[in-house]
Image (tube, rainbow, N blue to C red; front, side, top):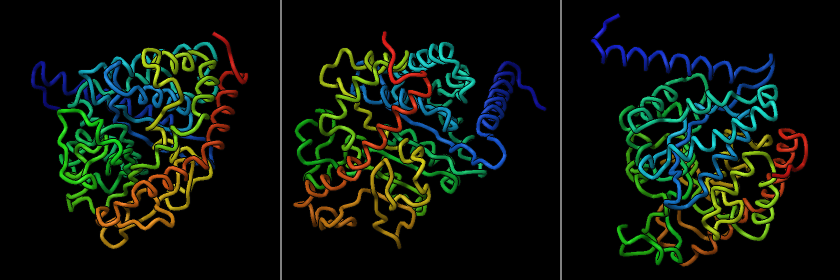
Length: 365
């Protein structure tokens, strides 16, 4: 053991913290004999407070409702400067109130202190946590990207060998719908051709995609399918029902209260979680269909483990979408429909889950 004054103490404390966190995670992932270990997940999110889309805050609440079915090894609030850390802590505080009032510990939920301890405090902390979790070869680490890929990409390039141990699921990181181009922020680069415009979460994506070291990495890119979370009246009706369940349900309302346009169960990033928690899903095969939608493996030779939105019978050139761009609306509509078809079952399962947590189909505030 080598000490280096105050810095040495800090290093030793950091290593001790990760040792304790890893041990706790192992215990949480342990199940009764004969049962499967919990899937390991690590989240990068652009969660914020009143500085953009509030959907990540709702998705975090949904994630906490399923914390008994997942081993959550890290939560990275990419936008620390926009209240990201504070937003995560507020959600965990609501979780803690429900944990105490509804005795969630006896129902298999992790302690609130563990959940707060999983939140990265800054980028350096985030990268260290990711490297630690992704270096474990025992079971795949599902890395869920709820924003752009810049910080994840930086962490991956620093330790590229962990690509073999992760299963990456990204949301809205491919190409943008042409109808959305007029809403691009002024400080974003506008491409010459609409068929080349990166989607809302496209920053950092191509640096990973075009890096040959990661051609074999398992990657599910949910680019347009996630829009199935938004369509129709059902998300509005579900929102009204969910707000009646405990402190987390109330928080579902609080996080969108100041943004009337978002008064529905928005959760655009939640399909990344749905893929992992669907009890009928074959986690090894995104083409089989799940609560997250149905996907294809479009480039089996060049990228044998890359999956993305299914085009169904719509003609679509996955190698060069510009060749079939005239069909992109139909392509999006089909991809979205594969999630819409699964949505009712997912909603029903969530309501059953909340009935188990809170002991009733709804509570009043």
